[in-house]
Image (cartoon, rainbow, N blue to C red; front, side, top):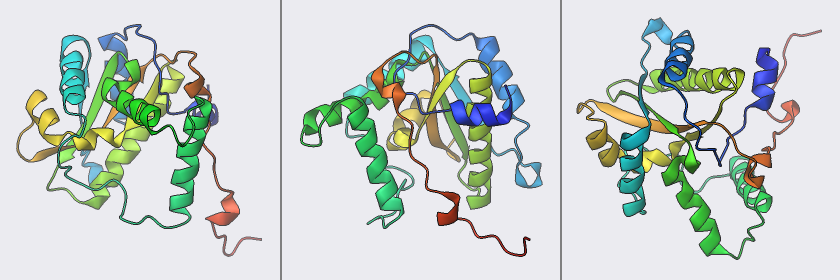
Length: 219
């Protein structure tokens, strides 16, 4: 599989089989991903990989506290504007259309959203953190590392779903993962094998390159 194929195949999977993933496969995945670039080679990422009882404990805590906790950062700006608002709206509408939940069925939509707390049934949860004293450049480095993990997972026959949902549980994660005071969780990631649930047929839209790229000085 080449890089283009991995990029094309990668999707946010929201329904997983329960089949376990070995610690060696997760270790190999992270070792390879550590070749991701970072400014000054700071390698600002930290990862906690959970399965079994620790992962189940996290799920139970999150389900017991559906409203979450005060987050340490804001995922989206207030009053999101176009084209970003349109893209987010289209993504949500396409997702619920894939599983035949109409806009007016708020209860089922919230029920689907709550499946984030279960990592959509994935057997492994990865949680990415960094030192809170680092700045936006290191957050970008962490993003490149996370993308590398997702593409390597595709190559290895695995599926993922990156979840900023877990930014809503900073205290829960800090307690369960025994994080030092200077460390904060950025996001989680569900890792495992996709099942054949209709939600996994979703392919999010992409705007044409002409909408967001400018070419200067080319022939």
